[in-house]
Amino acid sequence: MEILRHAVVLVHLVGFAVLFGAWVVEAFGQRRVTRLQHWGMAIAAVAGLALAAPWGIEYDLNYVKLGTKLVVLLIIGALLGVGAGRQRRTGSVPPAVFWLIGILTLLNAALAVLWR
Image (tube, rainbow, N blue to C red; front, side, top):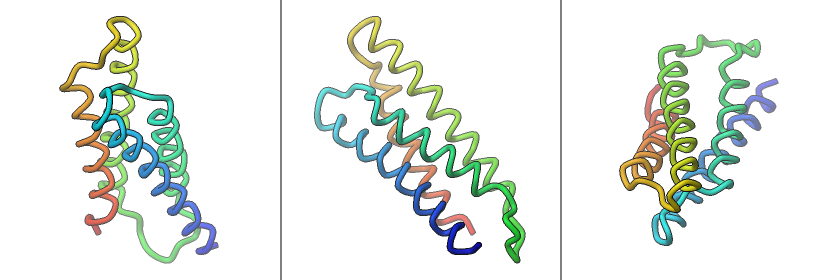
């Protein structure tokens, strides 16, 4: 069971890597929201929710950390939605929205790694 949990952790980190990697590519390009960012967020969210379930592990889960990461992920999702909507309407993403997506994605990955 622990091997499966580690595999889901890997999928979770890959989701964040896809989201952040797509954002970095756009940061050096046209600064827009892409479908790949949406996919990365969805992968990270689904894997994160699976990790939040107690799988018969022998230690307690840190629900404050999980809740904080979920709130940050929901904000990232909202910013992706707002950015995509503005991009469709005006052709560009507001700079504050674009930069917040990257900063909050990095924050969420940092919370996952540094908060024990």
